[in-house]
Image 1: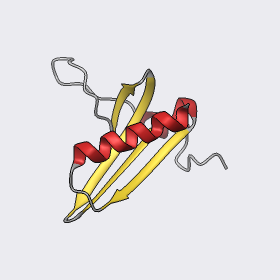
Image 2: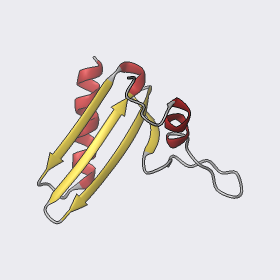
Image 3: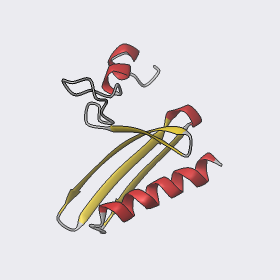
Image 4: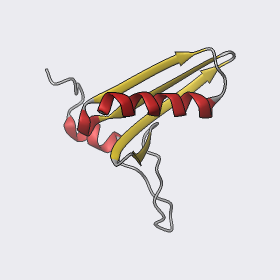
Length: 91
């Protein structure tokens, strides 16, 4: 099994960024943010609960995935840490 239980077409659609009615592009897809970081396609998702934050960063083209669970409620710092870790893993 390739890990894509719903198939590659559904997986690709879930990571396809949307656009506004006027055609302006968004960096948001189906629950994930898609953007370039350090020249790499990056898929990100995060969330929080009082006193907890979570963040995932995937860079599928270079085979890097990072998941962070922390008691920090500072979303910007958590994101910066996750991206820095992904940078180190990507080499």
